[in-house]
Amino acid sequence: AKEAGRATTVVYSERVRDRRAGRLAIETDLRRAAERGEFSLEYQPRLGTLDGTLRGMEALLRWDHPEMGRIPPSHFIPIAEESGLIVPIGHWVLETACKQARYWMQRGFPDLKVAINLSVRQFRDAGLLQKVVEALEASGLPPANLELEITESGLMSDLDRAVDLLQDLKALGITIAIDDFGTGYSSLSYLKRLPIDLLKIDRSFISGISDNADDRAICQAIVSMAASLTLETVAEGVETESQFECLQEIGCREVQGYYFARPLSVGDFSTYLTRHPAN
Ligand code: C2E
Ligand code: CA
Ligand code: CA
Ligand code: CA
Image 1 (cartoon, rainbow, N blue to C red):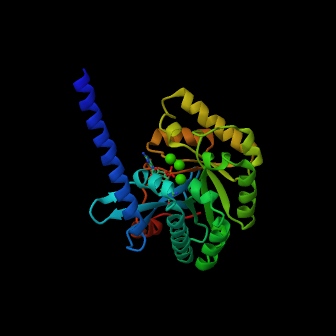
Image 2 (tube, rainbow, N blue to C red):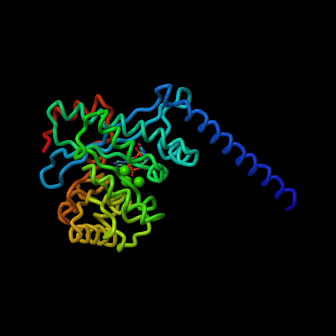
Image 3 (tube, protein in one colour):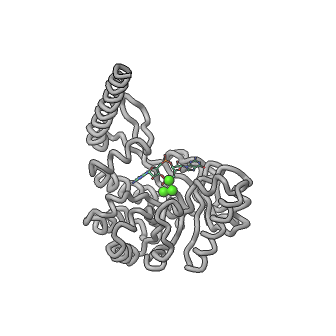
């Protein structure tokens, strides 16, 4: 038993070491990725539930590593968060998405709204407000065409500061969404205090909406609570027609998911635009 225990320990510590080494390698490569032009953005369409018109798109970060190929955000964003690299990377996302959205606006889609994910770390960064102002000025994107998505955990850690910062951001004319809604602290009283515009219902509730009574009840409750607080709702991760039908019945305002479109490269999104009427 003793021998076996030692063997397990060795294997375990090798794994930990490998994982640490892997992490470190990723972090090192992440530091250089921006200057080497390895980042890009994909854009996933967001549609009106009632009429199916294109309302906007969510910008999603992609990293094409020279040796490892495309690395999923779920893998590198946590490393970028912990190392603080997410702050400059997030700034790049903001600048790039604003410019791209402005470009599409000027080509006949003036009402498109681009949604950008903000990490908790970025939200805590003292320079955020200034960076948003700069990105809007540099791109010429009207503030009404920009939305920032923030998770509940990012807001709840310091509610007073969150209220202040969100008020300043909203004063610019941009809109604020709570991302992955329903998965966080879910203290509903804070919703009243926060100057937000929209709740994005987390995909985990959408996946069960058509065959799980609890998930359906949760979605229904979120939508009606949001309505009474004059907040909009968007469903993310809609994958099937029956999920979409449920969301229509419930009265969710906008939808996003593979059923309608995957995240698209700039070229593919341009093609998509030519085929889809915008509101
Ligand atoms: P998220 O903000 O919740 O983004 C939605 C994720 O769901 C995206 O994954 C999207 O590709 C995926 N998705 C969309 N529709 C469907 C669907 O119908 N079914 C399924 N199964 N998935 C769907 P992605 O692009 O891998 O991004 C994962 C997460 O990484 C994002 O989750 C977000 O938290 C983070 N992320 C992505 N880009 C950025 C960024 O620019 N900045 C920051 N801070 N985080 C980002
Ligand atoms: Ca998001
Ligand atoms: Ca989300
Ligand atoms: Ca998510």
